[in-house]
Image (tube, rainbow, N blue to C red; front, side, top):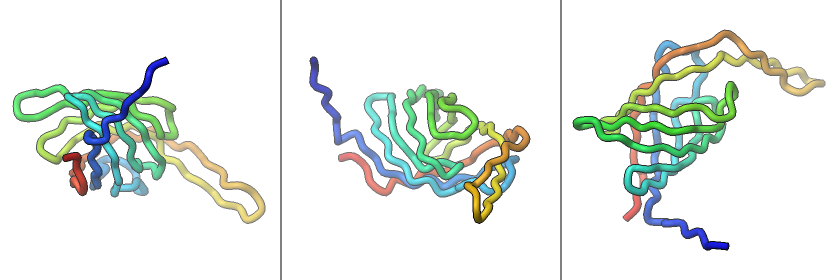
Length: 135
């Protein structure tokens, strides 16, 4: 049995501001985020657009003066684990978004009922602000 060591100097604390283009309204556009980066690999967690916690693993690939991030992410209603892909330059990013519009009804004497709506496809444009970084 081996010992797993966690490198604490890999941690970054971020605040992501995002805009969901082509999507129905109601998405969370302020996303606190914790990330650990080692070489070109990342893992982290964030408060996602659907107001849930997402965990992810990814790898960055350099392309000219930008990067493509490819990985897997959890925490969305439509699917347990889904692909993650983002084009990044400086602190900006663009990512495709697929989902469904979710509606809910609250009754005083019953639990909340969720209704799955039509498919919704759009683009997320975002900016990451580092509020704390590894030393």
